[in-house]
Length: 134
Image (cartoon, rainbow, N blue to C red):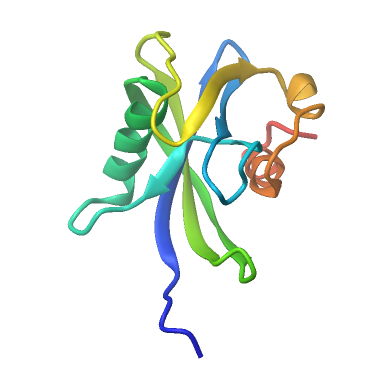
C-alpha cells in the first residue's frame, strides 16, 4: 500500500458571454488536454480562496466566485494522480487572459467548440453538472 494520499484541489469554471475559459495543460498529468484552471489547496487556505488564487496564477484573471458546482474524485493510479476536485462557477473581473504556470494556452470557448477539443473527462462532467452541456 502506498503512502500517497489524495490531493485536495479547487478548479474554476469561468464564464463570459456564454463561453467557458479552458486552459491547455503543460504538466505531466493530462499534458496537452484542455482543463478548467485549478490546482492544489494550500494548508490553511479555503477551497474558495484556492480557486481564486489558481485562476490568477494560471490565467492572470481576477474572478468573482458565483457558487460551488460540485466535486469529482479523479483517480489515475498509473499516472500517480489521485485528487478530489471542487469546482466553482465564476465570472471574470477583466478579460486580460494570459496563460501562466501550469498551462500553455488559455482561451474562452463555446460548448460546441469544446466538444471538438481534446478535453479532460472532468470538463464535460462539470459542464453537465452545471447544466451547460446537454
